Image 1 (cartoon, rainbow, N blue to C red):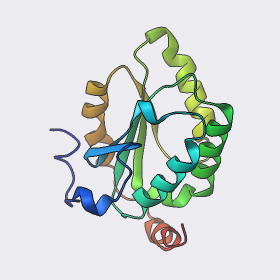
Image 2 (cartoon, rainbow, N blue to C red):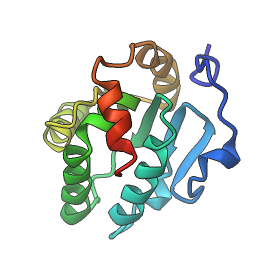
Image 3 (cartoon, rainbow, N blue to C red):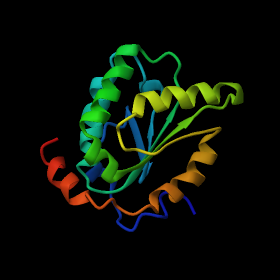
Image 4 (spheres, one colour):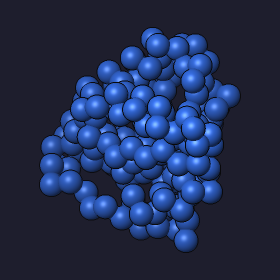
Amino acid sequence: MNAADSSSKSVTLPSLALDARLFDASRFPLVRLRPRAVKPGYAFAWSAQMRRLVALWTPFVLVTEHDEHETADDARLRAAWMRTHRATLAAFCRGLIVIEPRIEARATTRETLRKMTEGSGVRTVVVSSMRVAGELAPVLLKHSIPENASTARTRTQAV
């Protein structure tokens, strides 16, 4: 079973309207941030795409590779967006999985991720590979929608 098998609602790629240069949604509800998209200034495009993603009102898991070269400005902008859209994000993003293949770097990556997502309401996990992320995504997707999902649905329209 993979993340694509666990979705009860089929979402076709055209309805996603996500920028394929930034996100790979071919295995939706597992959505992967493309590593080559992480360039200085990408946080603005990331924010716009995240608005589209949560506007689907469909649970998803976001997967990204750890990029130690992400600019501080991009990291701050993404963290601020996650805090600002906390209710909506927590209602639909079942998890943020970061891939860090280097075992010696995982603890540092976890701490960086914790600081960045603090107050966002999203579960975060650091794993060793895309294979592990693919196995973990269905587990994260099984979590029920929070009780405040109706509030999040209302706030989504304002996003």
